[in-house]
Length: 93
Image 1 (cartoon, one colour):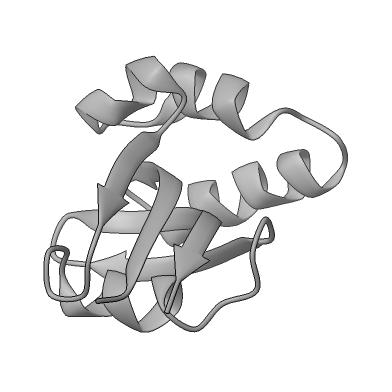
Image 2 (cartoon, helix red, strand yellow):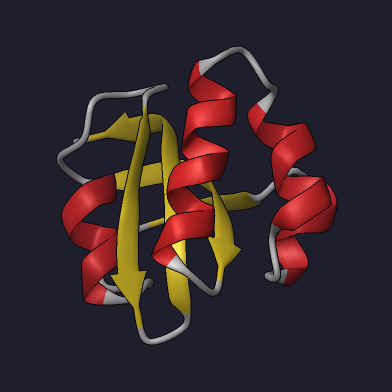
């Protein structure tokens, strides 16, 4: 079965999400930005979500996590929880 590891940053607005994405693309560390800005408890560990398979996260996550290029910041991804930046760190098929 496919499995992926990823980290994310959760914020309440698309505008904030885009601002943070710009910061990361300009050289800010994803983990540091997650610790400072993410409203998800995973922010304390740099946004690390650990390993998971298809269907274990919300559908919007699955769509990105199981198709996006590795180690590239994706988003904003809107879910019922808010707006996410996602970075897939590994994936097996």
